[in-house]
Amino acid sequence: MIKSQAFRILFVLLVFQTMLYAQSEGMVSIKGSRYLPLYGRDSTVVAVKDFEMDVYPVTNSEYVDFIKKYPKWQKSNVISLFADKGYLVNWKSDTELKDSEKPNSPVTYVSWFAAKDYCECQGKRLPTIDEWEYAAMADKTTKDARVKPEYNAEILAWYEAPRTNENTIGLHPENFWGVHDLHGLVWEWTLDFNSVLISGESRKDVDKDNNLFCGSAAVNATDLMNYAAFMRYAIRGSLKAKYSMKNLGFRCVKDIPNEF
Image (cartoon, rainbow, N blue to C red; front, side):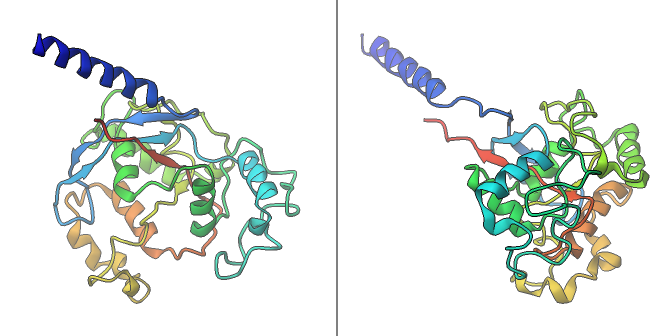
């Protein structure tokens, strides 16, 4: 009798959990695990919790809607502390794209501060480096495709391709998790983009050490042959939060509530 009641209670709790949590629109659930980053963590295994990730990077049209609602991020209003002179340089005006820009292309020329606030205004956040790398190490059929030569070759081919930031979202097949365009379109901001290439406990020494990626930082690589991963960490280590670049966009993630 007691066992039967306990089972019914557990069943109700599980059903309630399922009803309470539903996958967010435009996002996919990613089952976390422990993984070994290819670069920058001194061969330390990292635990990634379950999270949701946007299927696509944020587009020009979505960012237009955002700055109409939050005028402080319009290029004539943005504070110079939060964005450099390149911020939205490819826009005709505060709320209009240039004719050459496509609404369904990823938004670029956006600073980390702007990207972070965009995600937070959607009830989301920027992904951590480990969340982004964990999701991005999957190919179409495998959670971890990093040992596949064709996986890395495809990424490196993108790095050499010009003007991929002008392409529209969704042209690349979804990966194992159902995410599109982690590779092949634009680089993407992460929440802790400057946390890898530092020499001490504080992140404040990033600026004086941002040349580390040129040489000594390679010592930390767990797989020196994975040049694609090295390139990503090198780019991140050279950024400042106010930078805006033509091939740097972003997408958002969301925490998944803990189970009972």
